[in-house]
Length: 292
Image (cartoon, rainbow, N blue to C red):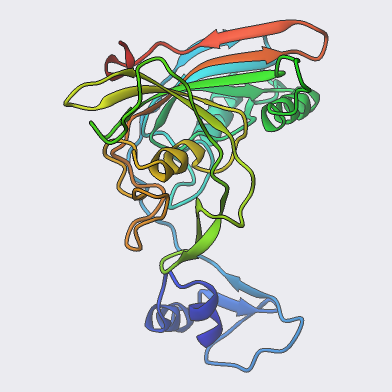
């Protein structure tokens, strides 16, 4: 129990003891019925009981579909991949079930990248593994263009910031280069935050409109670090309006998890260079809060 409680602090020793007593934990294929001394090489398995998943939006707009490449307008509230208590109620599972109901043998489209559960907008999927491979490379290395060259991928987002938190002239881009890395978190062990020892990250923020209900900004990201826009905006003292996790400066609240919502963030536009020299531009319609 000390091992489990120390390795997975989301549950205390008493809860792990209950799971042991219920026969949910095995060692080397045999059920563990009591505390045991672990040896190097032991394989532990926890068979988690089924759970009820929260309801999520189950529909989305299709921006592009050529039979291989699929670009959708993901609604806020829909997780992309299994995590944080979601397994079946995810975009991945919905796409798989949708594909299973179609022509036999047709491969399901699979997401190439992630968007946060409460981030809406453009999400790129592909059916062929080769297409997913080059898409993943393009999205990951969008900042790798040489001097004077256009990037192979350009990603534009819209978001609402806390009103009055950032004194920035409208239309004037502000570069943000705060590094992003793992820092200690009592519920998860570690969490992505602003960190001087983290990974290089680059964003470009442009204020579009000031309003008492939230300042509207456009953010272009040249890298794709986890929660980059949320962290970068918080790092410069302007957290996303309604973000329960990230504090001014880029640190995280100890009692909050990354999957909690309340913020407004929308993946609006994607410019992409294809493998054969073709270029793509996709836009997801702006939500009511994101126009201006």
